[in-house]
Length: 170
Image (tube, rainbow, N blue to C red; front, side, top):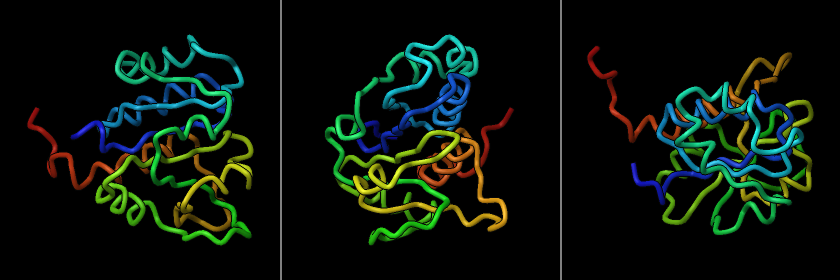
């Protein structure tokens, strides 16, 4: 997998180190290694993130960069996808994870997937910086994914056409 073509994972105002670590672990499962953090609530580096990341600490967390704003974290990004479960009054295309990540694989420039704080999700100002919205088709009565679950889902959709189609033999 070409690193320069991989989407950047941007976590905006993540609240818990454990969730950052779990997101890093989810990323590395699908070969994604570039994490950018915007104003992590509990500071950075975070020992709870390292403990939760398991083997992904050295490959993802050690290289993670912290930014003061989402605008700064989007440096070098040509196309960004904002993840949200809530309907917005923004005029942006809305895609499923599969469609969005098929586009990201085909895109020539750098893409990013933006995730919001665990409790509230992205604010409209954050989403306005993205080119498109990604919404997971889930139970409308409970459209809540954990941060790491959302990262895992997007990572899976990105990697499914790039990584081996069958598990390696044990």
